[in-house]
Image (cartoon, rainbow, N blue to C red):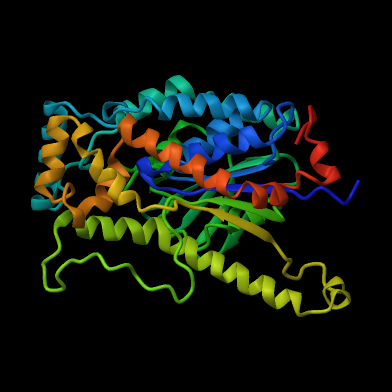
Length: 396
């Protein structure tokens, strides 16, 4: 054996319909690892739509290939009405409630949102078996699952986790880790896009999308013991010093509502991850300059964490525009009214286009991008290391 087996963590970021890209990456990984290999990621962390993918992997952690195929079957056949009410009555009812609440200062007592995501609750209730997560942990196929939500009252980023003995809660500035069995409400809360989907009450507080105020997206995996992390992002990562691409828009043009909303969603879903990864890279570089004997004297000191990021090689906004016509007519008219079907507002569309043609293209892109880096990925996952062979028919 060439060394101790590291504890691999996978981070599935948020991004609405963009999370279909992660399914393509997972499909490629399932094909690259040995057919009889168990779950390669003992620590699974998910946020927003990535939380739904994370639970699907965790609940069937004993058979990674099967869990990915099941996940792919859902995403390849997604329609908007599986996630939110897309019928004329449902769209108009929720939109009118949202407008009235905005004009009256939210006098109503019911949660208000632009779209009604009750179909998603029904779909998850049918597909997700929360008890399977604990069974996977008890069988040793999974060490920990973490789902991040954002508290509207406390303003904290709360990471709800379910793990094996040895996992402990944590508390940092504006973020906490809380041990609790993961259920349906955690998934709905973590994926509740602000303004678009309603918040969800867990215990005494209402929670929304976990990517909001998530200052350190990588930290849950590290708190749970990961020393090697694979990040599946849903937006193109900007390298240090890289210039912003020219969108060929007039500087003085007033932004549409969709353009403003898309900018806000990118700030929520993409920026914090890029900053956190840059921070982790700086820590690794600093640690590499400290003699090992110095670090060994302080077991509580920072530790080096290897990480790898797989992100789209193409802009997802352009892909979304190509498939805008696949949306139900009522939803398409609603999105058109706020500018989401125009080039400048297509970012919003890329997050909400839960239609199979768009999702299938993202899955194909994720698969292609991963296969293009398969040699690096094989090395990162340790395909040629003795410890990787332990995955065959053994618990994680």
